[in-house]
Length: 469
Length: 43
Image 1 (cartoon, rainbow over the protein chains, first blue to last red):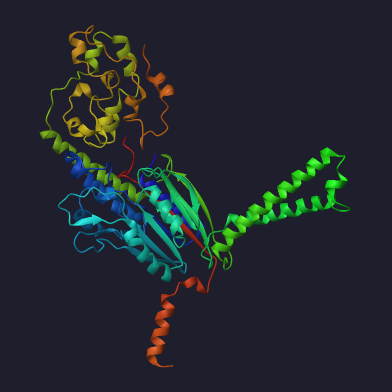
Image 2 (cartoon, rainbow over the protein chains, first blue to last red):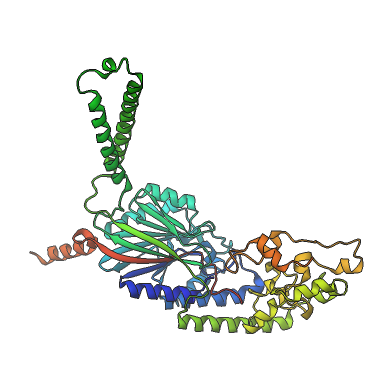
């Protein structure tokens, strides 16, 4: 699931079908897989980052926030990459150490169908090397002043935030002139947009598996439709009905006296009285909240949000497919070149054929599984030298040791016996003294069957598919 | 009206949000986050 070409196709299709003017934004952390750069994969990751910027140009992004993870190759590197971007990179709080001036644009102004949209970017946690002439300022040092300016001259204000979710919540609670926060960061899953005062907080989830699509009807009130007003109307209606019921008891004389000999009816009358008090208290409280918000100044604005999963069978945007194919070819060529000098380590893994000497039946069963052909799948896609893919298609290499996968010998190609049961060298030498893991736990599988590659992995079901006891 | 006054009026009007006089705009917002270097899944 996922893919830039599918995302591009859908954005384009939906914009055409609805005929609505649109704005396309990203809240950051888009360029790199990991939170730090693995030296052996630096060149490959930089090639990918550059291609993502080209793909975003083709998709037609308008603005992107500088995420902390986008800076792992250095601020200067991102600044040089951004020269090729047709969209604006935003960060109001990534500033020069000495100058304290933003190193990217703090905000931008985009007019969509006559609506002036102000977009602000805020960078979250960034691991910057000590030599960097850059620092990330706390958001509360930059946002109030900037927001005052942006609010004055814009109809709709969007914050692209790479800050932690708790900070976004505080911002939403404090500034009702920010109408929308799109958030990125480790916990930014695809969740229904959450209204906080006059701010909607949304995120589409990680690794490009979903896209967020929000239809907005923006009104001069600059306020989202308030459910509190609707609730208040309903509560007032309920109170009217309650008062009508009570009036029936109070028609002739004091109900306390009239119902003295009818305890059940008196009990009901008391319950209605208690309900009236509760209802009046709730109405008073809601009225106070709405009064504090001030007059709505016309029609409220409205939105309709949905997420679309980028399933593998969705169509692709052809120019992005070509771009990604070119990137994959270049990465494979780079890996092939690196493989010539990759160091073969003294590995405790021996390959599945060695296991078959004693466990022939199990080897035969394994050979019928997709684990056995995991490497040839990569070969078919011409990605057998891609360090980003290889560790999950060979035996006994973790993502952290990806460079080692380039030097892997033929017997360890494919997801072999030792991937699940552990390295076999000692076991082969002395099986009784060195027993193998009989059944791997979920953590072994999840090292590969997770994230963008297999987010619906179910251990109990899948283990049956590869079982051979 | 003096030219300087006219310029100020024009500048002030440009600085104002456009919805002061209009309302009810239908927009579409496409958004994403945390793409994490994923161009497409591996084979």
